[in-house]
Length: 129
Image 1 (cartoon, rainbow, N blue to C red):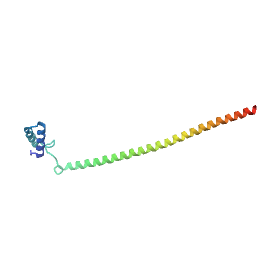
Image 2: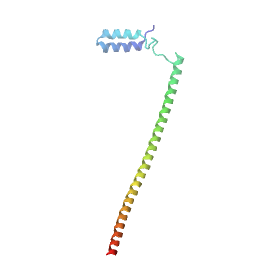
Image 3: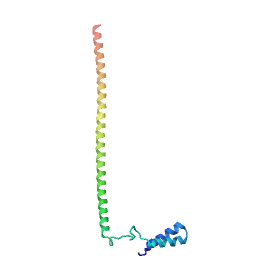
Image 4: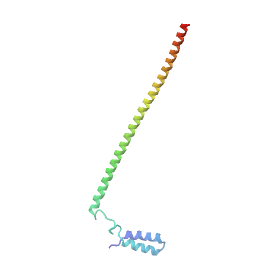
């Protein structure tokens, strides 16, 4: 097993901060120096030590790019739906306004008919008298 200098420094700092005395710092440095940096005790694995690591990193990058593409497509789809919803709402608002205008015109026409009927009734009454 090799001595890990980075682990010793980090272990020493952790021991000093954890216990507050130099004995804890020395114990932490010894533990950090003799222990491996990873689960297998191999420390940091570099792509030149493990050829599959570079392939996995490339696969991760490809996956992230694919995920970014999916996210962009989802955003575009949401914007299209929002635009479609806005256009639908504007058309429905216009139809509603036209229906209100038609109702007002119909009400005016009904009032005019009532007035005309009243005039005709009055005319008929004056003729009879």
